[in-house]
Image (cartoon, rainbow over all chains, first blue to last red; front, side, top):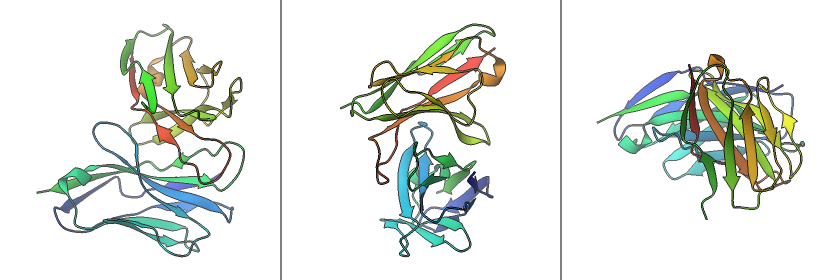
Length: 116
Length: 114
């Protein structure tokens, strides 16, 4: 079974600075997807970024980028020019490439605080 | 287009009471999921459905039952609620087979069992 580990329960960053959230995972599969979800106080789960394991290029979405190290099974999220609206719980998640149910396996989350 | 909706948003139950959480999606999605979120635990899969009339167990199915009688609805039932079922419950759906499709989440239901 796959596992996802987020070793930082809480992180904080100053507005306009850069912060990196860590995620490691364990799998025996070669093809899979990795995701970062944002959960603001509203509780809504918002997909921030995703990475296909077969792609060597790191995914980017505006101020959000990832550092995907497949051999090390590491998938970190970098938030540049942090904004107050970035304050939220962030979850790393894994999904197999195929299979019968496409279920997500989540880490325990990192609570990000943005200080003005 | 409302996406994924959940009813109710909040509920307080007493131990031993029963209730049903309703998830509805208007995107004609094949797959639907129920997760629970507990502090420090992330989201864990309770049950899922890969199509109308089908259900399957996830990671933490004990104490819950589900039904998918209509494609657009996925019901989560608690027959005899326990304090350990105090949690936030999320429903999600995805289009169907195909690795590129994403899961869309509902807004969650906060359930407290006293």
